[in-house]
Image 1 (cartoon, rainbow, N blue to C red):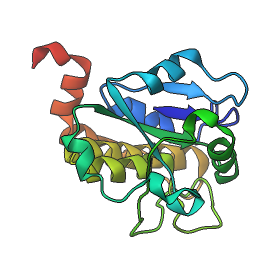
Image 2: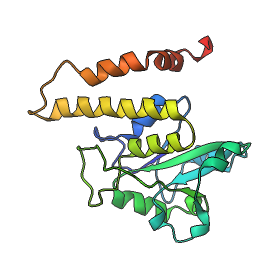
Image 3: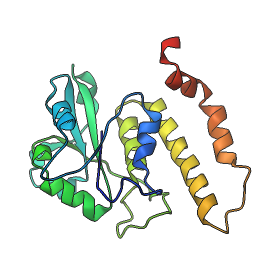
Length: 198
């Protein structure tokens, strides 16, 4: 589930949408402090799901909310509903702190081992990653290695396309990253568009 700030919805540099491009089922809602989406609230309270907020643990005051290891999530009889706050870091912290419906949810935090490859925006903290980068790491931790790889590759394609449209220094119009993605993930793409064929 993506919870987007109002400013993020139409930004061409937004990477959260890449997650929804590459997973079978996902949801996206624009954040509102006073009028949260009813469908979203229904998902959060649905007994089928275990909502898990993905957010840096240094911003979580109640440490009992923090999930130290994601392994138990795979053993649960509930479907993990990962929630990614999508916005600038200032917006994300505001959403995290001002959303009552998120305040009791367990929080999964990652420890980035590399700097962000996202050159379209800059953060004061080198460990701040783009939303798609975070999602790829979380999927990998949950054992969804193929989905993680597909998302990571799709993020690379997005970066290539964005830099091609914005930079006079990037001039390889042959789109090698996109071509490699199509070769590497043809079976996955076919399944995404025709799941009944499996």
